[in-house]
Length: 115
Length: 112
Picture 1 (cartoon, rainbow over the protein chains, first blue to last red):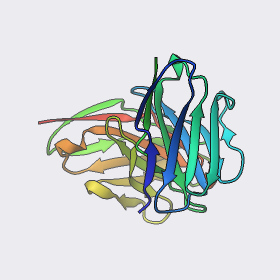
Picture 2 (cartoon, rainbow over the protein chains, first blue to last red):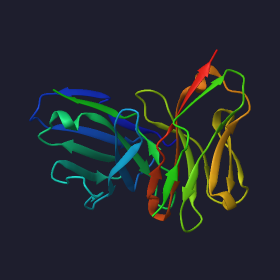
Picture 3 (cartoon, each protein chain N blue to C red):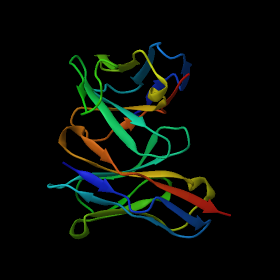
Picture 4 (cartoon, each protein chain N blue to C red):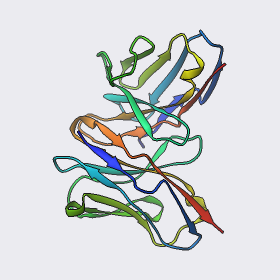
């Protein structure tokens, strides 16, 4: 149980284009989903927390207009990197948790390469 | 706010040897503590967690961790390391509302 699927696993795009990453909880309803960014050989940095049906809460320093997060249902959250630039290249990981259960289950991550 | 320190960036052990990965946390209340493992290019897999109760917790893949409140530590141990254990290990501390902070990670290399 508690499987989180993230898609795509790898995406290459041109500078200036937008990229959407999906995060799905396959066998449970995720009241809260989290988006992290991980640079090579570094830890995970929380970007934002999203609760189903409400606006995401962004961490300090994360541009909400650049990293659009939508959590339209209890099983799906999306992260859209708008007008991507090479400095946005990174490994993005989502996680999901149940209400009242303080465990996050992680997706396999998405490697974004912006040319 | 909570924070986590993993003092060892990289550890190398021989296959079959014992392993201990250190984790120290800072949090005002009783924390929720986690160890996750990440293989290259992959997401994180939960090894074990501590919420309350018995301070020695057992996890998957033969790992265990001990919560020591007096030392603000939650060290991960395994009595005999296998080559497949080579990965990045992250300690994390959580709070109510799922707010979680990760340590910088410890990369484990296993020598044949």
